[in-house]
Length: 486
Image (cartoon, rainbow, N blue to C red; front, side, top):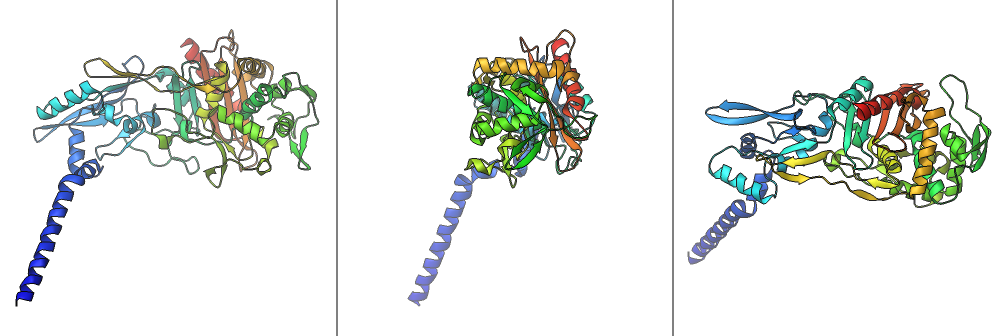
């Protein structure tokens, strides 16, 4: 009998101990995790009682994101609304009543809800909470220029692609337009750009074969290492020979077969985008040199921006859907790499940064889309200061490349980007896709060439016979004119 009582006592003690441990766990250690869970109903309701900060344009007038006030059973709730619809949807993102967020609404949520680490905000937040007052978040002021953003989407005309623009000296992003777009007031279904969705920001996460716009990188390596000069001579028979096989030049929209130029210089090869010239340059430099210079411009890293990191993709060589850096030089077809084919993929923001770096004398500007963050009392919580990410090329190399890019627009493949009274520097790209005769059309540029104020990159996906000079250059011209004269 005593043995049975002993067993019962031990079992009771074990159960009591388990209850104490479980209670302690859920009331102390696990409480933070429970509070942080996005599907926690209490937290979701609490978020709706906060008046999220506004997201505005540079002047603070145009509202990209605001609130709609609602009264339910005597309690005030705030529901997000987006007055500009799809104008900058992928960048601004969305915040739903269900607690899902994207874009700046996600990455800047602490500021927008007044929960950031700023001491005055923290005190104000707690006083509002204890006094049952409405908590007001900080406002976010963007650098986007609404008229240029709207023009970029209009010029894309529903075609899949992106237009990005920035100040090459400060890094301010003026345009970050992705097409197709969606209205965050009515979250969109997936779009029709292959496997992509309208929710994807093509400007920062869209990966495209850069085609001949990558010649800016190859030319940078060629000139900066001193291996070539703009006057270095080449003979172009319409192709170069690599591994015993011909690598052909591209053609023009109005001709059949590849172009042939004969005796040319490196500068002329750049002006007329001659693949055979750059194929030979690539073979001379080697894959490692070309890729190391690409890294200097930001390839193989996720470029800094205020949007969520998972909404930005790194540029570089890809294999089986993953970023790939070759162990051995012979792992890469360097001839095709040199003119932006092979397995090279780049985002429009990355190619814009290449042009902006050249315009900035070889220093890589750090891009940003948030100008400042302002507290409800009008004080500035945070302000973005221009920074550089390092030096990619020497100033003399940047000057030589600028002149070569000017020649592209004055008499080469980019004449459609000419602006009366303004000297434009640019580079076209016509990147092959897996469908013959269908290309991704590129144009990357900056202006004025002698005193750059704006850099622009354009890509338009899957265009039948869509050469960059004919399809993308006119879009870049329109956006340049708006930003320079608007």
